Each structure stands twice: as structure tokens, then as C-alpha cells.
Length: 438
Ligand code: PXG
Image (cartoon, rainbow, N blue to C red; front, side):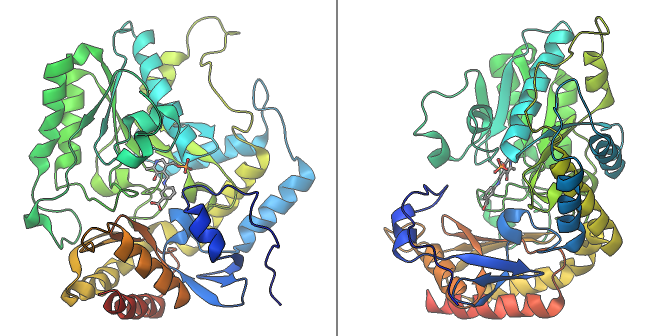
């Protein structure tokens, strides 16, 4: 039986072509494992882990049962000046997934809030260290750091910025790393372009390092279309930050929790930033939650002054919400029991072979893969940017496959439970559709 709601009008949908959507709605009514069920009873293969978040797939019993149990036992307790056991347990378990001294965690409710939290901590850290002049924030062209004012300001996707005024002052951007034809069709880190990190030296020379608090980058730019860091680029950014006393923030909202076949991109690239922002896969997307990891040196600098003084005037009503913590613990249990945080590593060759198998299709102009991520760039239709990819999106959905598109780029990021047969199915469907949108 169809379960279509009888009025779609009141809900203003996010990042959606509302009128187009409501003229031919696509509704999901159930999900399990690798598949959604639509309101008209069709199965749809999840090629994107929801919005890069359902890393363990859907309807995982450890997560749903933990949520139900927690809601019955302790549904809420105040986040300020009060605690509950699961928040401490979760933080202790999370820091074990991180290398080195990234050993403290601040809880938020989304990737956007994690970014705001990281930027505020960075500025306050310098102030407490006697460097109150370090207030500037550096992002990167084509970066995506959520939709709040700080993240939007350091972000570098024009449509997300241009409608919303002057944004936060004192922000500048590194140039992006995409476009060198020598890197087209790369598997893993592209070979050329590590020296693009030296653009940070240009910004240091322009603003003077004494005014710069932090640099924030996604290790892999996800939202803008899967742009991979050239080999050595992130290490070079780290070195320049060290030379000038600038904090380095990795935004791992997409790359965290197994997406690259390692716990975090920090592990994959072997570069340790000062702060790491996460969300999404933390709770498998089931309950909103984010976590910001900070180095011990940062946390400890705040732990001074009178014992009874609040050290950081920042936090959310739902920071460390008990039900969210239970969901995260159930998620970590699932990841651990099934080895999901490293499962991608065993599939990466198969995955990359399958994606790069699309190379012979004439409209495919570039393919990029790393971990269980793929970016497939299409030749835009002349005068109609995005139209070809969106057409592919609709045709894939009709054919039982969920993909994501941004501009004329298709981004894939399946749940980490995907089997080889499902990878085959995904690319058979996509190949068929790409031939239709030729
Ligand atoms: N940082 C990064 C790197 C992200 O990818 C955010 C911050 C913001 O997270 P919240 O939880 O506030 O949405 C994100 C979110 C897509 C897509 O299809 C990507 C995101 C969100 C929705 C869709 O590429 N990234």
C-alpha cells in the first residue's frame, strides 16, 4: 500500500529544488542494510550511505536497540554542569580511535556545529596563549564546512556563500587543488600539486602569520565533487602551519569513521592536525551528533584559572545528549564487531577497478577514487550546467540506485558493508544510465 502524505506544501526542504521535487516526489519509507524502500514499494541501492553518513548501512539493531533502551532509561540530562555515564564512555572510546595526542572530545549535534566549535576553540586557544592578534581563519576554495556563519565563511563553494552577506570578517582562502590534467583519472592521491600547499605561505606573507589563528581543510573535499589532495600536500600544509604557529584543522565530517579504509583520514594520510571535526558516521547518521577532537596541548591550555570557573563559554543544549551517545556507542560496537572501519581497505581495489571501468564512456571526463569514495566528472551539456548529472540522478533513482550529484560530478560513497556483487550492480546501473544521458 502506498503511504504518500497528502500535502507536501508546508515542509521547506533543505538544499532541494522544492518545486521540482514536489511535482514528482521521491519518498523513502523504509531502509535495511544496503537498500531503501520507496513509497511505491521499490528497492533502491544506497550508493551514498545516505548523505555520506550511514557507514554501517541501515536498520542496524545495535544502534536502534541502544537508542530505545536509552530513551527509556535516561532520555535527557542537562549538558552544562552535569553529566551522564555514556558521554564519558563515548569520549574515552573515541579518542582510542585517534592517533597521538588527539585525546579530548567536545560534543556537538552536526558537522556544521563541529566546525563552529573548532574555529572558536582555535581563536580562544591563541588568546589564552597571549596571542590575541591571531584571529584570522584560512579555508580553501571549493571547501565545504557546513552552513553556519563560520563554516560558510571558511567554505569555498560560491552558491553556498553569495546570498548571505559579508560573512565573517578576517577570512581568506587557499587556492583549490583541482584541475591539473596530469591528475585526471587518478586512483588514490594524485601525483602532481603538493606545492599548491605553498599558497599558505602567500597568505602568511600577505596577512602576517601573527594574525592567523587556524587553517581548516577537508583532507578530501567531498561536497564540491571529490577533490583529492595531491600526494604530500597535507604534510606540507602541516609543516607550514608549524613554522608559523598556526593551528591546522582537518574537517573529517565525511572522511571520518572508516570511509578511507582507516579510522580517520588522519590515519590514512599520516598527518596529525591540531583539531579534527567529525559528525555523520559517528552515529551512522541515525541521530544528529558531532564530535570535535583536540590535541592535549589545546585542551590543557584551557584548564587554568579558578577551579570553579567555566573554561570554555561554548556548548549546546544537546551536547552529549544521552540518546545520541547511546546511538554512537551502538555504532562503534557495530563498526568494531564487523571490522567496518578498515573494511574499505580490503575492497578498495575492487571498488577502484569498478569505478575506473566507466572511463570508456565518452561523456566521462575525469574519475577520482580513494577509499570507498568516487568522483565521476561528466562533460556538461552546453549552456545547461548540472543538467546532465541531475538527469543521471533521476534515471538512477528510477532504476533502483541512489547516487549524489554536485554540478556535473557524481559522488559515490556506499555504506562500508557493501558486497562485491552490489558494487557490480551499482556500476552496471550507472553505466546503463550514463549511456542514456549521453
Ligand atoms: N563539514 C564537511 C566536510 C561536510 O561534508 C559538514 C561539515 C556539515 O555537516 P552537517 O551535519 O551540518 O550537514 C559537511 C556536510 C553532499 C553532502 O552530498 C555533504 C554534506 C552534507 C549534505 C550533503 O555532498 N556534508
